[in-house]
Structures are given as C-alpha cells and as structure tokens.
Image 1 (spheres, helix red, strand yellow):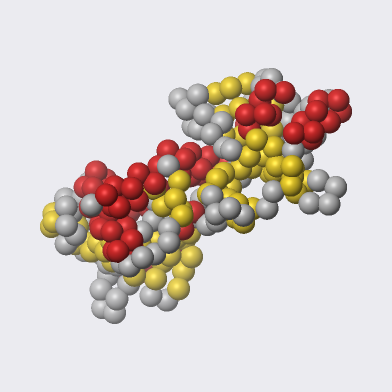
Image 2: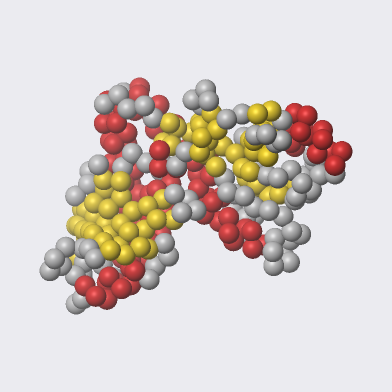
Length: 277
C-alpha cells in the first residue's frame, strides 16, 4: 500500500537532467531505475521510480507509517516540483487531481491514504506498536536536527554538551517508550519529552527516568520549541559531581529494551480512531 504520484512537464525535460538532479539531493541513493531516499538519522524513506521511455519518474511513499514520513518526504517532493516547474497527476482519494501541486494537497492526500492503510492493517489483525502523534513528532524533529544542534555545542555558540539520538524503545512488557543514551559523567542536551536515560552499569545497561534525573540535577538550560536554533523542547544538564552521580545511580535499575525502527511505530491517535470505526 503506497501513495503514488505522477508528474507532467510544462517544458521539455530529459530523463538525464531529472535523474541527475534527484541523485544530487540529500539522502539519495541511486539504482538504474530508481532514486531512493533514506535519512538514517530519522528512519524516513521514499523514492522516485523511472520507467523506460519516460523522462519523469513516479513518486512513491508507503502507507501505514507515522505521519512524519509525509512531513519529511514533502521537503524533497516540493523542491523537485518547484525546480522543474511540474504539474501533478494525483489519483488518490482526497488528492490534488491533475494540475498544480501544493504541499498542503500532498499532505492531505497522503494522510487520507495513510488512514485507509491503518484501517486495512488493523482489519487484518496486525499487531501494531504506537506512540502519541506528538511523541513521534518529537523523536523525528530531534533526530532531524540533531547534527545541527550538536554543532552549536562544538562551535563555541554554547558550552560543550553531548547531543544523543532520540530512541524509540520496546520494553520487556511490550510497552513502547523513548530514551537517550548517556554516560552519566558528561554534559547532556536531550529532548524534554523522552522517558528514559540509558546508562552503562557494571554488568548491564541501567535506566533512569527523566523525571528523577531532573529532580536530582537542576538543568542549566531549558529551551522551548520556538528556540531559534533548537526546534524541539530541550534540556541541558551539566556533568554531575561524583556525589550527585552516585545519588542518580541509586535510582537506576536494569531494564531490557529493544530499539524499534520509526517506520513500525504508528500514531496512536490514528490507531485509536480507526479502531473505533
């Protein structure tokens, strides 16, 4: 199940110029008949498929994904349409039809098809992992901007701190949660909405809840979402003293997690909406 979008040129185009432009875009990987895109930082992927004799490809984005897949794919899709001044052929229900493209129209059509994909998956009895839409958005935006955020702590804009990847985790009871890794002895900047900090223990990883950490250790900075450089609500803590670190570790306990890829963690509100139908 996927969203498929075709294009119509408004000026003469060659397959080579279109193919080469797509191949030069961030996160592109090239095969003879396809330009795929995969951002390893966020886990989002999509692609453009070329067909024999056709200068323009078809865009493809899988359904049954968290809504952030559409948000990230829109960056490349909109740039592609605008660069080549393309019109679209969009057969999707609630789609754009034939004619001008708009990012709003793409997201409307993809979200409608994604909802239908959720319905089919749940009707088939598929077991689905999910998190609140806002949590999926938090993980996505944090990881999308993580390298740029880390640079702020390395170029002198801010005091040094480690900026970890936001992880989606499955615990041994089958609950989906979120966390970051931390050594426990360095300054750290992390998204305010995560649940757990994963620390190396003597024999195995131990976890500390975010709420306990922030009760014991006062943040040096807190930034809201509208911060000009860090687009996800975030917290910065300084390296704890040896005494404080011991206090923190007293609250930590072993806990087993499996990391989940983001494409397998759906939006809870949409899952619940589909279940109620």
